[in-house]
Amino acid sequence: MNGLKPIKMPSAKEKVAAELRKAILSRQMQEGEVLSLDSVATQLNVSAMPVREAFQILARDGLIQLRKNKGAVVLGITETYIKEHYQLRAILESSAAALAADPEADISEIESVYEEAAEALREGNLRQYTDLNHAFHSEIWTAAGNQKMKNMISELWNGLSMGSMVSEEDYAKVSIKEHGKILKAIQKHDKETAQKTMYDHIMRSRDDMLTYYK
Image 1 (cartoon, helix red, strand yellow):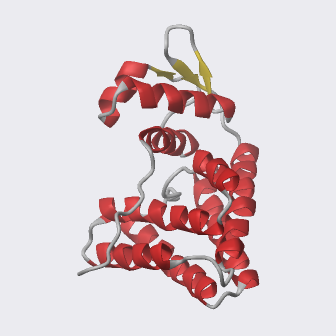
Image 2 (cartoon, rainbow, N blue to C red):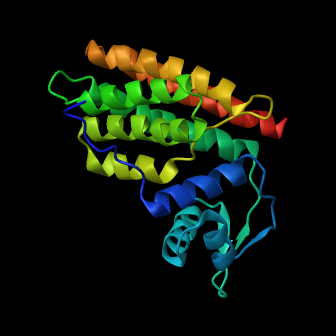
């Protein structure tokens, strides 16, 4: 097939930060757990540099406390923190979706990624779907045309926000359906609907994540 362009994947530091954030928010990593720079780098198969940069991002978010020995300690996460985190994501990402619905915005990459994600899900390739899920959101941020907004959202990203009672496959099926509604609104240049569907999408993710705090 001709005309395909490479999918923009998150940087190493963004992927590391997303993996750690997801583990902390879902309580896979507990309060007081010590994170070693070298250990995290080995587990995620990356160099120490993106882990160090990810630690700095998470420290600014109040998720970890940096230590002088190049490690960090996981801080306590409350239900209020989860709600505030997703509320901020919802506000920023819904605004990006509205901007992407502008008739002048180039949405070709959003459409391309959506189709690839749907195909990956049909083939049962959940690992690829996870990457394409990020790419779908990222292409919306890009189409919005506000680099500062994109940078802010990128640092808040925490991957698939699965609840404690749902499988990755079931979650992906819900996700792709909601992505379809978001894309349809963007294609119709319906800014209000694009904003609302994205906001609802993020807040549903919040509700899923909160199942870990019941």
